[in-house]
Length: 132
Image (cartoon, rainbow, N blue to C red; front, side, top):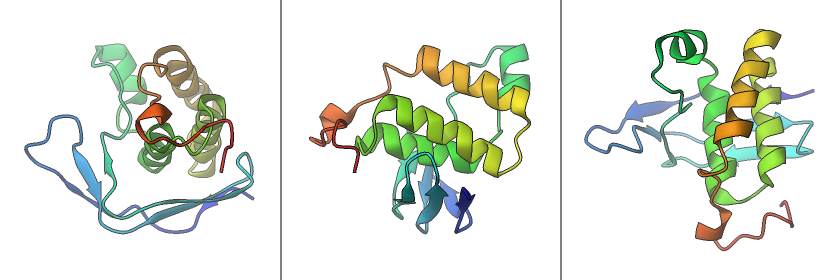
């Protein structure tokens, strides 16, 4: 059963535009999709969910699924999973914290359409084809 094993513990990283939050403790998520426990390390910087600041879109998706967004950011920047698996884990983790199905679908569709420019395993040297 997919679930978060630890709470989200982070602080505001004032003065850093792209990395607004820093994890103070590891965030652990048990994923059925990935078939393992994903551990986002303490010190990991995140911007949470990158939702366009358009009034309707932000009203529907802004500030939602923060824990799922941190796991997704980690998978995108670490290269520990393919982009499709990372996006599926985001959708799964959103369900695990009770985000309604219509909102999960909308947020998942957003990362599938707009996320390719943020997926950066080449920065880490990890081959996403290996997936763990």
